[in-house]
Amino acid sequence: MTISLDDGLAIQRMARERHVHVLVNYGTTWYASNRASYDELAQELGGLRKVVVHDGHLVPWRSECSPNFSTSLRYIRT
Image (cartoon, rainbow, N blue to C red):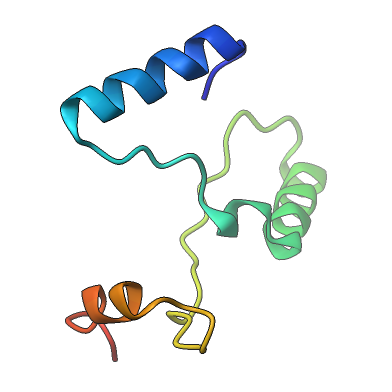
């Protein structure tokens, strides 16, 4: 999100002052399947500037999730 510690600390300060959460990254961004898709498209189509992948994962209803996390997602559980 930033290229410096000062910028990161400024984001942290503003989020705390305004009582908002800051999302740093989506874990699915780093899926190996996304990289493989990019590589295959680049090979087939040539120079790519951007690839948008719509994917995700099942909500992690495992025991390591906090009760608050699991409860907050009960409305989207399928």
